[in-house]
Length: 252
Image (cartoon, rainbow, N blue to C red; front, side):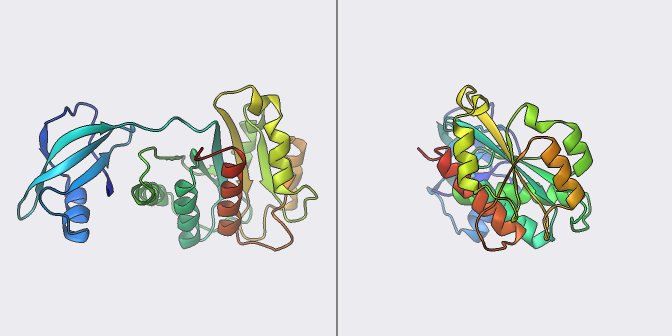
């Protein structure tokens, strides 16, 4: 059953209610997916309200649907993953957002580091739309939140490691990423907190600068590597999230 995002809240929807699909949903469901009368789809909104609905009428510029049954969000993962990724080239950043969303990331923090690619703040709206599209693709009604971009220095000033462990990816690190995860699984920050949180920090192409790496070391962040190969930033992000998700039992 296809999933579609609803720009309007579904909080007040009741079983049997009929309503017009939004222009965006109408376009994707009827024009693109070629759905017809009596076809069923799932609508979800920003606050994880979701309903199975049936198309009851298709008109020239709109479609009418009937609410059939609510869809409930799954239990939250035991460990919530925050992906703090340095801003990279637009198409590559989109790929990282898309795949990390499909893999179950809890939230994104775009970082402006010394080696970040130039970008416009208007990209935030585009990134959030990319996340919505990924949720539709993987049929998840829980959307990761994409924070506004933040300078590296401001992120460090938040002292993120005081509330959740932080792992930074560094090709020169001596600790394998899997070992870093294993050490966290037994730490009080993970084992004693339900749900717990962990932040994965990944630099832009070329990684973090020496000054940034030194600052993260002083902050007590774990530094780990993903193997001998030098990965692109978006590849490293996807691989780290996938490995962390398996390590923390996502999908179980």
